[in-house]
Length: 635
Image: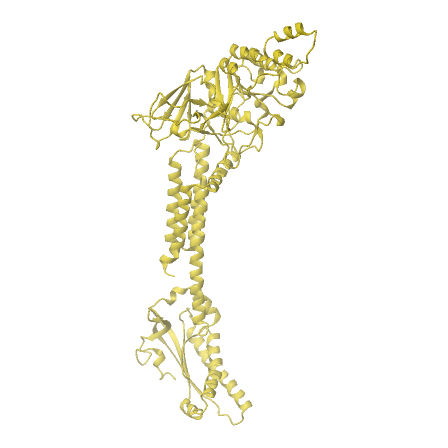
């Protein structure tokens, strides 16, 4: 496999990963979100009890002390008044009052059985104040934000009329905002009496966790096609409950939505997005679609005040409970009322706490953002590093590339963590790190397979000509086999059978027997050469050519060659003894062994298609400059 073929698979993996990240399927999104969740789990936002935000909790104990839900609206009206008496800046309801109160006197009388003598009683009871009207009057006496929810059900009820004006900077934000065609709202009298209305919708991610909240949502009436070119026909926008609570608490008249093209000349520019939203004196940076990333503290008991304490004589609400001057969100933690959500830090928390976390982080300016440039930075980072590894891995080697890869991954993770903790910017280092790791592993695997293939070829080619130890050394240093050579001092051995022509004549009628004899002789002689780190260059009929100090260094090459020559003569004696034991008339075989030391050019010689390690004499120690395989005079 050529070098470019070895790089093509890692490059294809890199290109596929880039396309996958641009396409951003759900598994990739969830992996990225898991990274952002991990940041928050390691270092959540620090809860500040001094922030003027509290939750009046309709918890299980409140239900046990005051009665089952829903409470009469007269009780809710009393709750509103008592909160205002204790100095609440605004009371915010994460509770809907969409249907008339069944405990209102007129509704109770309607359910009475018919009686002959109770007409006067019925009239007097029916004349008592309506509970919904009592609640509307309580709403009107102070600052109250009423909640409503958008829905995609078949219901087509519109939301209540917006309470706040919205200023636009740049093109209309509507194309970027979520749209709904129906809503479930409070009774009209309650909505009209409230100082503000905000939607309580959450948009959970695919894994069910709430990480972001849209600050605005648009209402598009069913059967209508929205138009964004005419500023007088734009669909109405509704703030989320927390944003509306902040507006009312500041006494602000409206919001301002600034687009990223705010310096343009208007019109719809869908390549832009929402830059930030102003709520009174508060500036809130958002994502392009108007969402705020929530930076959670996690569940904090100090954030909660049980509702029953409003009516308690033994444990009344005190000044240190933080009600005075605070935004009070009325919600429930009772499991039976089914307002429970999941966040990156808590598998189950009351939904009202999500609104409280949003209000808190806007007040203290602790934001998480993911600017448009983060995607480009992530793509560029792992593309450049991936290409770097693919191109340089064969040169750097597996170990050096691993160090580069590990260093880059560590730097990426550190940069992501630093961006989160220092400036609240969300950068995903995990997907780029995984891609770089896969590219490195695939490139390393291919390089390893190539190396193993080369080693296997070397072992196959030289296993019969070198000792196993030398074969392994050569396999670890395959560069010694490059076409060409180097000059070095070597000792060469040449051995052939004396009188081989006569022996051949004796076996002319049985060439197989001659072959067997030669193999029987050359096998032990070759073994003695290999045991002493010699390299067998070639066999030429009855001849053996071998040399020392190539391709593996052997400082004692002359001694090893002499030792091998003597061992070969002893091995020959053993062969002759074995032949005489088989046949007393067998003629003893004699060999000539020649040795010489001098400078030679040694290397992988031949052609681009086939080559062998061999040596060429360049020293006057040898009779001529020729290949040693032809020097039959060395005997």
